[in-house]
Structure formats: structure tokens, C-alpha cells
Image 1 (cartoon, rainbow, N blue to C red):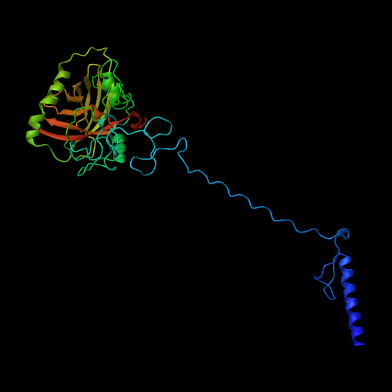
Image 2 (tube, rainbow, N blue to C red; image 1 turned 120 degrees about the vertical axis):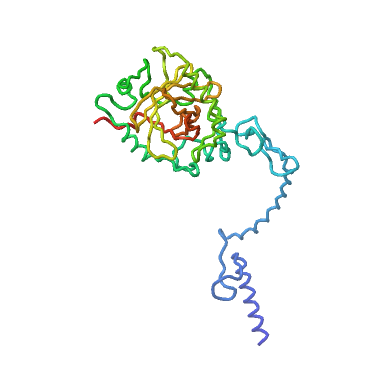
Length: 356
């Protein structure tokens, strides 16, 4: 009996497996019952076998070693980073003239930093003292004082006009035809062209003059130096100037004596094409006027003048300095045999007080 029961159970189990296999099912998965539920394949057909794995791709061929590309810069001699060739081609660096690391000289040879030893006080004229680089030991002059001085000494006269105007000069009996009253002050370049020098050599091109704004020059310096300005003045004194001569205005200047602060003199200067200098000298303290005679030496570009009075002071400077807004002028006193430097302040017509 037991043997019969076991045969029946085995037969049933075998029939169930055969039926499931016929329906395309697979054992496992979710669901209840032994082996879970079976999902039929679409259309009742069995699923195909999985795709075969793709064949492995061949490894890429190794790239050739990098060579020199077109347009690359050559390496520096002895190795190192590539260097840009000198010259020839846009963007290339051009060599600086002179030794490596040097800067070109200033046009005209104007003294640079550390090259002003020939000027007493260590600074060439041409700047209002009080600004950077003013002369050591020199009190100087300031623009506010300058304008105040102009208003005090150059008032407008209702009949004669401003000092150094045509009416003012005519009132004192001094007049030249074609005289450039209060025209623009000359620059060094225009002045040198006027007297026949084709190309102004630039600042520093004139023969340099030592100035003495801090203390008077020694007696020996006066004796050694007085001959040069005396000869330049004599050339102007001996020259005959026709009345219809053309003139170029050099400038109108206020003169401040040694260690002074106030204008004590004024002078207006002009020159012919031959370098003959004329003008009028005004002593503000004594309120006297006198004609000025002098000249410009075309070789050295020194300029000297003297008032037409016995024992008058002789003034000497050069074209470089005289055409600056502020400069120094050497003053020789033939009476005391002394030499010292005074200050010149260029006065422009726009600086004058307006008529009321």
C-alpha cells in the first residue's frame, strides 16, 4: 500500500514538470507555490539565447614622437626656454641702441639726474623753487608772491598803459620801429632760428655758465670771467641798428636781486637777426629807465646786456636759461668787482593786472 502511494506521488510530480516545460515556463522568480510563477515568452516562443559579447577593439597605434612644429621659436643656445628672434617680423623685439640695460640720452643732451654738478646749488634754472628739485640753500620765489609782485609793480596806467607797452616806452623817450611790445616770449628754438642757427641743439647745447645764487663768487672768479660778457656787450654797443630793423621779442622779465624776495628791476629784451640786443631797463626803486645794449654770441649762445649808464651792471646768461619761466642771471658789478647770481622771472602779458 505504501509502495503504491509513493508511485502515485512521483507520477503526479513528473506530470507537473512536463506540463510547465510545455508552456515555456521557467522555474524561479516571484509568486507563490513551489518554484514561483512562470512568465510566458511572447508568442509562446522560448527566449533567444543572450547576445554574444562583442569582439575586443584593437588597441590604437602609438602616436609618433612630437617633432618641431612649423613656426615654433628656436631654443636658446645652450638650452633653456625658446627665445624670440631679434628683428624682422611683426611683434619681434627690436634691440635698444647702446649697451644692454641703458636708456637713450635725452634729446639735446639735457642733464639728467646726477648730471647737474656744473650748476651751483645742484639744479639748473628753469623751475620755480619750492617745487621738487629746488636749489639747496636757496630760498626761492613762489608763484603767489610772483603774482602779487606783478600786481604791485605793473599796474595799468590810464594814459601810458602797462609798463613796457608802446605808450609807456614812448613816454620815457625810448622807441624803435617794429619793436615787439608784449608779444609772446621766445623759446630757445625760435630764438636761435631767428638769429640764423638752423637747428637748435637742445637744452644744454649752449655753453654752460656756473651760477652763484647761494653765495657770491670769489674775487678770482670775477677776474677770470668778466672779459667774456664785456666783449659780448661791446659787440652790441658798437652795432648801428637802422630804425626799420625787424625785431624778435626775447621776453619781459622781473629781476630779483641776490637773496631778495621782491622785484626790484624789470627789463624787456629783443634781438635783431644779427643777434644785436636792445631793450629797456627799469629800476623800480628809483623809478628810472635806461636803454639796454648787448648781443648774443652765436657760437656759444651766451647773451649779455648792460644799461646805457656809466658803471651799470653787466648781466650774463645763455639762451637755454633765459627762455625758461624762471632762471638765473649772473650780475657783474664793475664798481665793486663782484659777481653774484640774481633771479629772472618771465612775465607774460596775461599775468598783468587788467585795466579798471
